[in-house]
Amino acid sequence: MIRVFISRDSTALSLGANQIADALQKEAAAKGLEIELVRNGSRGLFWLEPLIEVETQSGRIAYGPVQTSDIATLIDAGALQGQQHPLYLGDIESLPYFKDQNRLTFARVGIIDPVSLDDYLAHEGYKGLQNALNLAPEDIVQEVTDSGLRGRGGAAFPTGIKWNTVLNAPAEQKYIVCNADEGDSGTFSDRMIMEGDPFVLIEGMTIAGLAVGATHGYIYLRIEYPHAHIALNQAIQAAFENGFLGDDILGSGKAFHLEVRRGAGAYICGEETSLLESLEGKRGLVRFKPPLPAIVGLFGQPTVVNNVISLASVPIILDKGGEYYRDYGIGRSRGTLPLQLAGNIKHGGLFEVAFGITLREILYDYGGGSASGRPIRAVQVGGPLGAYLPESQFDTALDYEAFSAIGAALGHGGIVAHDDTVDMAEMARYAMEFCVEESCGKCTPCRIGSIRGVEVIERIVKDIEKDKNTILLRDLCDTMIHGSLCAMGGLTPAPVLSALNYFPEDFGINIDTDAA
Image 1 (cartoon, one colour):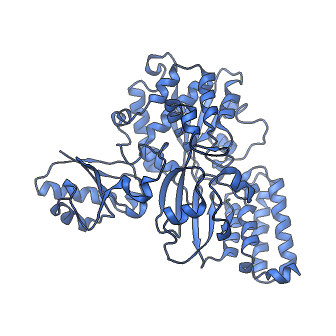
Image 2: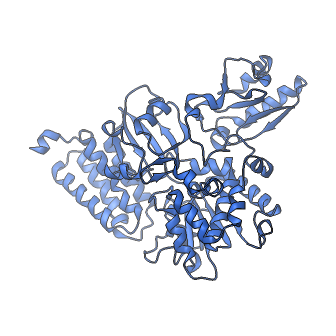
Image 3: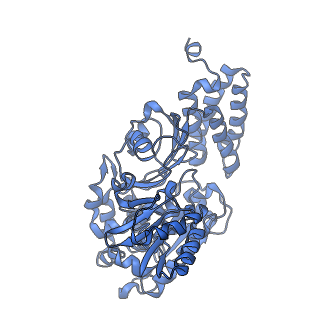
């Protein structure tokens, strides 16, 4: 029987993947052809979705982007046997975009049926957990520490240190919480993992539980991710039924229970303490720190809070060893990072590479330049609170410290490109406006500062006491940076100040006159 793969990823679905799957099955049946249709995750090449892959003796042959009107001609041309067609792409893994990747966390995404435990096991799934069951908690934490894994969210805090803190915190009950409230603009790696390989997240959380002595975990899922919700619950059910979750994991006598909780639809709940408040059934307000969640977290107990990519990176570390993972990357940035390209970019999608690649390589070698064909003028890295980088900084290496040195942050690995038609003053105003909408309101610098920020930027653009208001805007940003309770208010000035510093002409500021 012919095996055909069509993605069930949200992006592919939005581009018509379900309609392609239905049309293919109907056309094949009409021609007396038997096919086994596998709904896999996306390979991350979104400009080629909907993508069809056909399993042949020489590998999986891809065709795309496919429309329903193409189905009949594909079958007539022998596409189900891997034959040529105008949409023929060949072996997807040999394409330049794909072949130079370092797929560690995303090794199975796009290859397997996401909710098939048999598929997961056949592709080296749960090897990390099996190794972890034979290790003492301290040794599991040491492997993660040795790997150099850092949080794949905003702060890039060393995962091993966080786990070690929870391990050594005395308590009868501890928790593992996965922050799956992926709300940054231009980011979708968490969603792709949960939709395309949910078992790797479940395995990572189970290993985390064994490492710190936690017997219960929660996935706090962004409410706008219905397909991930379905996939996660299906995978969790299969894991329970087959002994990979529950009171006696694989006969080890060790327990770990896991459930999905849907988020409250607020950006601020991506901040770990606000997330914990929401999980407890309260309004999503930021907590004062200290105490840290690792000491006093969910329900007042020691809690590991990591995001999806951090936890999904753990299974390969426990499978291959900390040194194997650490061999990828540069400096203190070890391993790989799934990068997400969005905005005005020709080849939007996701690819996973080791740290060290430059932003210019990402934009042009992988992204193919702007979709409009115009020069890329500014790039925002790390979500709506990330700094805007000008072309002069495109040679910065993908490295936490290198980005910090230029006043930027990698954050979740989201990269949004803008061509030379962008109005950076408008982008700065939007950053403040975003904070107005999403602030939890607990601290004054964030709650009031963002409102005043919008007003001041509008006065600058309208040439109302421009010099005075420019100074005022900088002072306001300084207050937000140093006075805000959390990163929401503390990082909102990053896009504003970077736009002001690198693109002053968009604010009507004459650099020479200003300097004089």
